[in-house]
Image: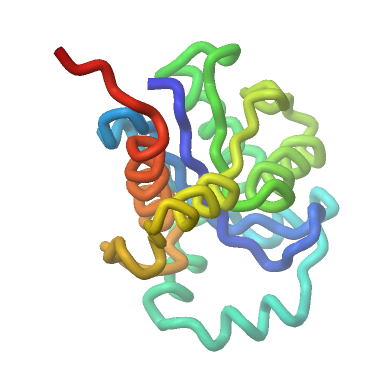
Amino acid sequence: MKQLMVDIETMGTSPVSPILTIGAVFFEPSTGEIGPQFYQVATLRSEMDNGAVPDADTIMWWMQQSEQARSALAAKASAINEVLTDLSSFALYHAPAKFIQVWGNGASFDNVLLRDAYRRAQIPPFWNFWNDRDVRTIVDLGRQLGFDPKRDMPFTGEQHNALDDAIHQAKYVSAIWQMLVPTNSD
C-alpha cells in the first residue's frame, strides 16, 4: 500500500497552528482495504516551543466537543518532534518515500499544517510535495456521482479522533475511487 490517509486535530486553522493528534492509516482505494495504522498525541507545549500559535476560536470550539474527543487531546502525549519522527518511521517502514501519497482533508489543511510542523521541528517530511492528495476534491466528485459520504456512509468511532477520522476518510475515498476507476474483471 502506498496511499496514506492522514488526519490531524489542531488548536487552529492556520499553517502555524499546533497539532495535538495525528492519525494515519494506509489504505488501498481500489479495494477499500485498510492497512497499518498510526495514532499519537503531541503536547501543546512542545508545539508552542517550536513556534506554533494556537487560535482562541478553535480552543473555544474544542471546549464544545464531546468529553471523549477532548480527553483524547490530554492522553499520554509526547513532544511533537518525537511524534513526527515516529510518523516518518511508521510511513517509511510500510512504503518507500517516493511512492507514498499522503491524503489530507483539504488542499490547504492537514498536509499543509503537517508539513509546517515538520519545518518548525527541523525534520524533513517523509513524502514529496507532489504526492499530496486532497480528500475534499474526491468527495466533490463523489457528490457529482450521487454519493455523499456525510450522508451515505455511517461513521464508526469517535468523531474528531484523528485515527477514527482518518479511517473513515479512507473508507469513503475508496468508495468514490471505485465509482470513478473501472476495475479489471474477467
